[in-house]
Length: 88
Image 1 (cartoon, rainbow, N blue to C red):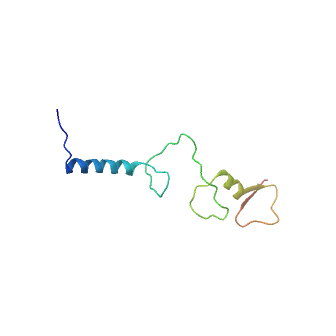
Image 2: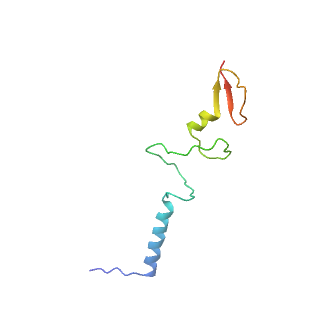
Image 3: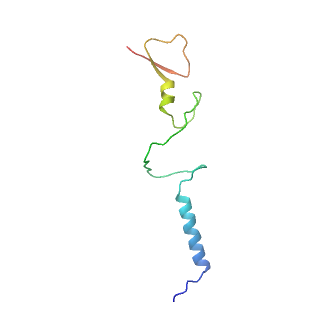
């Protein structure tokens, strides 16, 4: 029978491999940098940013529909944070 001895070298190799696997996973919380191409089986859900948001966050179709309005005529009271498109 072959006996496997626990040596410092084997323990260090195991710790290195475990840390490598932990570094490659995507966590459920916290800040992470994710590299490479990711394919989702369903569309990811993101919260709708506030209308006053001026950051680089993902936006939703609800946000776009509220921020960009197509109208039949120019509105009387224009909201400076909304883009208006007039139908011709």
